[in-house]
Length: 517
Image (cartoon, rainbow, N blue to C red; front, top):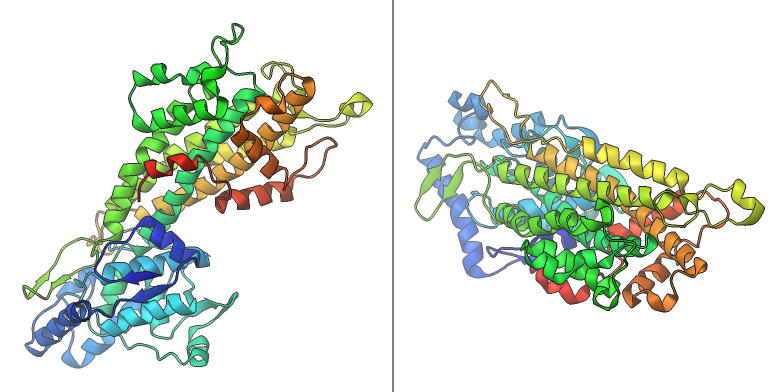
């Protein structure tokens, strides 16, 4: 159970909620409830005293000089989410939409947004009942926050637009009626409080971080297996060697490779003085991602545990503070950096695969790691097409690494004249992760095939493969048998991708405390 109150939560909390692994509740602590109610009460007091409040008694954005007649103030929040109902593109998945709802809820619980306690209860109810807003993925420039996609959350709270309910897309009004849920009528400022923040980009960033962290481990395991397939030199990961270049994450990757390869027990191979860079420099490539994880976590979790709408309501000091906390610059920087580090993992594994397929570089293994023999070897092509596919997926991943944050566009009558593009960066990152996971599934299949071929040649024995590597090989074989006769591999690769995304293999469990939550 994850309780939403004023205390910080973690990336893992958001991803667990998004996947439906943990239930949620809203704190009923009297001090917490009173703090939330104090903010909305302060706004009500200002309204009674005829105070001018941006987005409450004025129009939005460049229209802030337009004063709203008293008898129309109550309608303004409804108009805000209505005219932003123009999102396009693919819809966020239910997992991504739940991450968005949980992220927005958490920001509002800090008590600086002037919302009612009833609004928080409605957001919690959506998560508890698994009523998931249908949210278009495109239309946000990342400041003023994720206005257009979050308008779909605001609309659902009020019983409008569509939701995913029990595997179907349905009208929110119908689902609410069946569930006995009363639609909200947003109070002044509540439309802004929901929409004028960074919840979409931050929710997506939480999901991206978790997937990238796992890829760092899996790419290391695949590299260890590739080193055996390619008759590599395990002494490239020597502890003394890495002590003189003290990047902690890079050293951690080298240590994991030493552990997998029992490197200290192996004699030096005089014929393999130096491997090609995709093996020799693997800790340096994967290490960039590994060393980035701590500061990426800091950026993401600081944003996650922040009040990031505008204006900020300081009920305690009785101030309305106008600023720009909706600006998603930190998430944009994190996602632009993460997507580059992840794409480099795809490139690394693609290069390892290229070596394994080519008889000029794979040290005596069949072309394309084909398992066919005798006359049938002539018509079998092994993993030739899989390697071509991996190259295509890698190229697409690399192409998408252009930073989104540098493409700021002035919009909304030049009020939003410098914007973050954080949501586009997060979407790019998720696409690169998907492509890299496709490359990873292909490489995982390839190293398992290569290990079995190397054993058949007598160059390795089962006992000569470390226990963790054997477990990985045996687990992959539960999904995919050794490739002897050519067969269509699409469904097997899709199954491997799903297992990767479900983080099925517990990799380097003794090191899990190295990346503390």
